[in-house]
Length: 230
Image 1 (tube, rainbow, N blue to C red):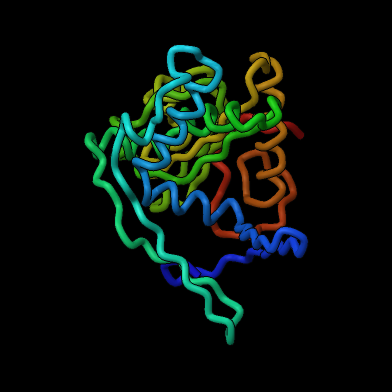
Image 2: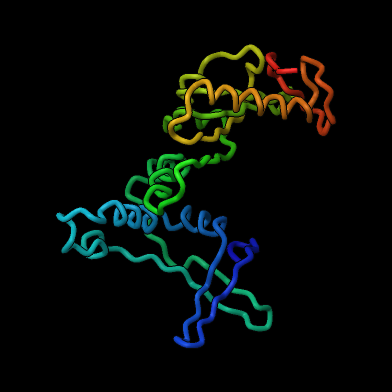
């Protein structure tokens, strides 16, 4: 349990070495990254230094000294671990660090350092339109816009996210939230557009749309895209 949220984990016991290992899901790891920002950034810096001779004799915790503590307690009767933030270090540049954490930039670096497969989609969350000025640029993306007042959704592709969504889109001029997913490096514009066309067509099968593609009408929202493959 962490901040009143339940996560499923597991414990591995090695009898020969009398070692217990606790494994928890990526969702909990991401939640902890948002809280222990400085530790997360320092761990990335440490990984970036690996293999570079000028850092061989340096201990990063001595060079960048601070401590953050996560309290972990186990309730045997409930078979539950309780995670609680005991102490955290305040970031030096608070807003910048938060934007970096929310951006896809750090995720890409983290993935590459941990030998994640190259063909990966980096997923995003919804952000308010007022957050766009602080958005760090992202390239090669599929993005979504939503107008919660008129109940419209829009799907698009872009080489440059910020430049594209700053353009006025007559289909959904008053959108108030946006999100985006970064596509794997190396995909061409033609491939990106093909993915966009597919997603638009999938959404058209769920929501009312201007092309009158038969849909399941799962919501009173409508798909605002005008170009839909039939």
